[in-house]
Length: 271
Length: 338
Image 1 (cartoon, rainbow over the protein chains, first blue to last red):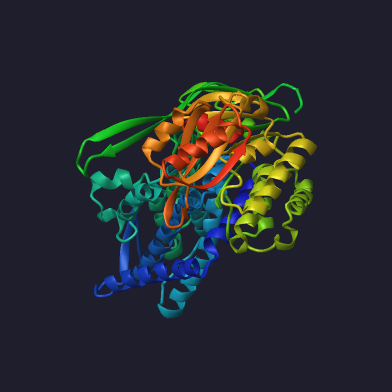
Image 2: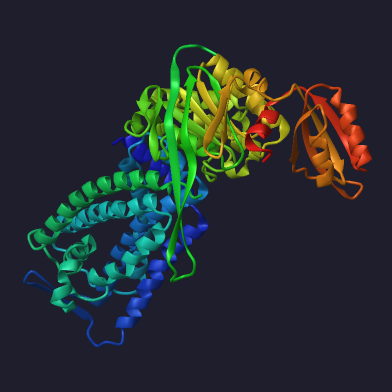
């Protein structure tokens, strides 16, 4: 896998797909609007904290913080889906076959696109966090910065690798956006983005634990808002690391398979 | 043309497209199989400019897509420089490139230079060579002055020239040109043809497969041509050799109004006339629809015979042109005047 290809793809993606006023506006506006929606949804309730439990640990964390973290990580996840949508844009503008005409590593191309999305996400994250801190008080409780950093980094890696798996659909099918849209709402529900996971019926929990977003939310909420240490979040962090490796391997297999099937079914091109 | 061996070999190549349709939303699916290529065989020699000709839907683009690994054949085999295009696709991708007509295949928000640099990275062009190669290609195609403008500001001709630069970025051994002059104005198309023939083939010794449905383009450029019709390769050879296959030595091209079936039947029965083909013609003369006839004849003595027949049937002859056989006549012959 060539770093030159990763960098070239990331640079191209940033220039072609993100640096437009419309994209920048929606990148900022949507998470802010969604966050406000959730904030006002919880506002009428008397409780200002949420009980968050995982593997015997119980943290009382700030309701607003719970909402912000949920929104930010979910937005990041949808950004990863957008990296796949870039392939759809390539298909429409007639460049997908030009890219796949080259011998460049497909996984490097996907990673480049995902990195560009992640980079784009970073400034959005900073902007949103600063906005929330400026306007709404959030009770943070950080006791272990390493745990917090690892929670972010591993969430990021696991979600990038899952995003790459989903991108394979965009290579295979002209209906990639529809296929990926099927995943969006269930992921929002099963990950515990808007409600604590212990409220989920036990029978559905195995589905929740298949998602990196679930463990990312647990780790970041615990370490940022509940004062958890590295040892406290060892399980979700280990799950995230395992998922990052598993989904990376799966992405490579899926992308190779998708390209092969697309060549057989003649769906690499738009027409 | 060098005689160094085969750069491209195609054996019994077939490709079917499966199309499914529903009669209505909940209706049964019906499947149609379209045979785009049917047991095609041909070879292209090293350093040769080979033209694949045929009407729309003949299978030209399908052939190119299979050869440059974007599509897999249903059956048969194809090799580029001895490499199987299915089994060794990655190796094939390193030594080929493809340029298609139209304005796709480029990033409009990137500049011309950025486009080329991006593709240079995808092809793993040695880092030290990237800047020089991009510069040389831009100079060759006359784009240096606009290299740092976004492609969306380019004219159609400039985009097409940039496409050729992209197609040459990996210094391919075999270049596929799929209707590269489609939609270009006359001068730009002429320059592009000259560039491909003189620079890419003659000077650099590249092998080029060109698909086109412009017969004059093939006649002007190609060492050999192959005719595809409904997925079958119906003839392969040098243009001059193939032209000898035209049933008669001359063709009369006539633009005429008030043409009737009775006139056509009469024409076909004339002594020196071998074959009459009617083709579409977009135009009017004195407010009447103009038809174009290509009449294969044995000798120029047929001209007065044909004209007098037309006059007797009260047809209005707009123009008459007597010429020797061309690839277009052959094209008409093989495709039945489509």
